[in-house]
Length: 149
Image (tube, rainbow, N blue to C red):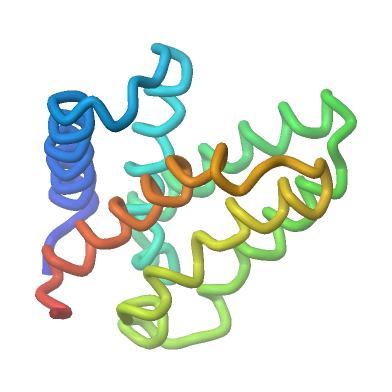
């Protein structure tokens, strides 16, 4: 079973391959700030299926979320912080390699990235699609490395 370094490397590799493809095809051209956010989302999603274990990946994942919660609270975005906190607790209610290591979780777990900004801030789902796809891509890299498929 790969460790957190292998999952981070796999997430980075999948991200770079996808980025190369969309840039070459001219489908999407994010600015540098968006590009950095997409990379972080991909890497965190690559760690997510293993956050239910005592691992360095869990420490990195929840450390990044802790920083994000702080930023959201400073900005007064308490509803979003609460929903993210709720979602971050979901892996704790299952056994390792349970639902978090399934293809349907790969598609459903990142859905709040699409749904919450639409519900809370009336954002267009199309504007959020790259962020959702980055999370699915990171999650996919984890499942591929764990040979779930």
